Image 1 (spheres, rainbow, N blue to C red):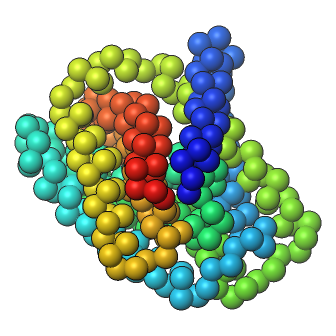
Image 2 (cartoon, rainbow, N blue to C red):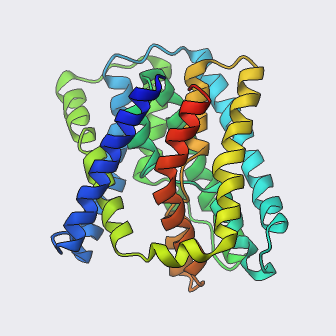
Length: 305
């Protein structure tokens, strides 16, 4: 992708984030409003955006492409789980805090931020890989993620695994695989609902940043070391490996973007639920979210994605 196009698209995303920042500072986006809008984004518009990827008719990927995407995605998350064990041991982190860095390494924000950003900067066929990553993310977090965080103190629940986003992503893959066409009224409704995702999710992201102290996160040296390894070195190595294997450029772009995403919110939400401390996760989310606009834009330009 041309560097100027990347800058333009990421600039648009940044403007939407700034709008959310402004709305929160002006107390237009209050806490209760944010919670309700977050539920709408997670359970309605984001899942609709996932399905709209195959309803627009612009997706020309094949069954073989989907199989390749699933294979690469499974291997990628297996590597992330391994890095989740290794990176906290490499960094100067207390033993009791390693599980938080483990979770931050594996569970980046491939949904709430990843889907709308991917929709804005990637070609249509690349969205197939984004959908695959979201399915794997949900299946893995509500099994592996919960076990890592709770250390066996929290039960795995099927209801959590089968969230609206996961169900819609699986249905989307089935629609694609069997080439099923929905009635035009249904398809158009899903597309229109999905179109609301980018503005709502980015505005909520801006509001979240406005409420958090970025200064405290910046002071944490471990976060910066983590940032260099997980959000710079890992995506670069991934791109080099995929290119060596002659993987299609759209898949390289998609998996790079998913690997370069900031820390996700689910580990923080789960930590709060079971009474774990959340300072490390909060700092990780804020710092990586703010800096991801620079790291993603810069790496995509340097790597000529």
